[in-house]
Image 1 (cartoon, rainbow, N blue to C red):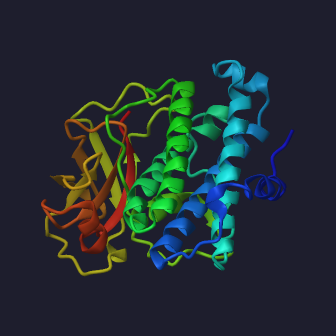
Image 2 (tube, rainbow, N blue to C red):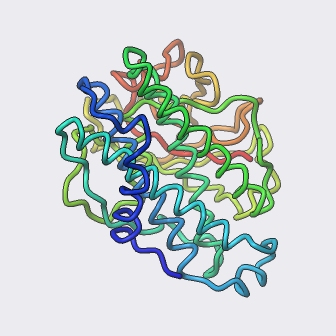
Length: 318
């Protein structure tokens, strides 16, 4: 059985049309923007998971050490993502809003394997972004309790997917006590690493890139990054939206779990557009790093609004 995005989504629309939360309802601008971002991410997740199912056999999964039935469950996860996408599509259409179309994607980097592990390794990156986007988007849905409940019911399933896949690759299913919420701008910028082209882009600003050049996380995310491990970043200072004195100190703000208190560390510059900071103590799971001229005191929301020179970059600690 092969999954195709069009056939599977069309079949699932009829399956989900009877659900109570698909009744016609008015959507505010905040509701619409949050749902469009969620749909954009669900499309990406479906493409990754369906690719992980379609591209390899059970024998290839077994050869790389995955447990029995793992490929089949990757297919089930792909079906879940298609159901999520079809449901959000119907919510938007019922409100008279044209849903954002699917984009063409590619894996962002090779991770040392041409098999299933390579195909699935980026999923923990995208799932962390998806979970963070749903958490961050909840603030925009507080005036629509029904829609907030609907989004939360998707979020909890996404978290189960994350735990299952992390266990399958040999990582901890629950690396930290709290997940990290993301603003829409940060979530969209993080997901953009997967994009090749889109028939239509979301009206969300794309920030200058911040790249974590090393270390590259192993596919099984083991061992966890130890506190003090050098993180090497690269950026293009000519892309900054504001002029910055080349001699001015720069900082990495690390967002991990507590979005009200990112960890700020001064960058040790190693060249033009390159620098390093150590992994801060207490960082676990997936963190998000941005480059800034501020030495501290900003929340994630403030970094999004005015404090970021480049980023975010995803830092997989465990």
